Length: 252
Image 1 (cartoon, rainbow, N blue to C red):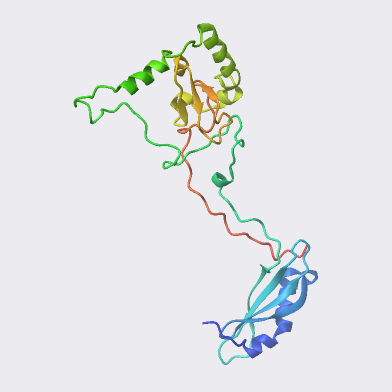
Image 2 (tube, rainbow, N blue to C red; image 1 turned 90 degrees about the horizontal axis):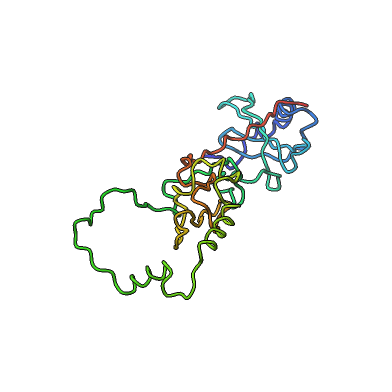
């Protein structure tokens, strides 16, 4: 338990703490004595202002101690510590949280987590447990929706020329020959972020639903691709950064 009252002998040894701090940090880096803090029984830390350029608001801390019933002072350590108004680097944020839509370029890979909330299991060709059961007949509304998809119920639909013109426009930017698609690990055809479209062009196009892809919300060729493919790579676990190491022995 930390003692509330600093040990008298350790607290009075300001010259010892100053000498050791100057030896560790250099005489030009150590400023005025800022005070004493009790760390425990016969353990005291002396604080000195830091005059090192670039370390505004930081201070040196040299800890002294002594054995029970001994008057000889021992130096534990000297460290450089930040104060309340010290200039510090921003908190470390994993790359997966720093990434923003539009950051991905040709050749980049964007791993997805196994439990990504944007994806869910799809059809894999495995037997359906409901197979063998009696299938109910479709309703009138279901039949009507299929009929509307193939063009029934509208006065006019796209001609073959109109379909080809649309396909040419869509493939120009988000087709298999674009730089992004050439560098992609796999095409959109096998990506979980691809939304199908209706009509005859569904065999060649879909809509991208990956917010980090440059094609998000756009019609893309099934042969297009980018580094945000849902199965491109496995999301690595977040790694905490190593503690900051300060070279407090360099007098330069």
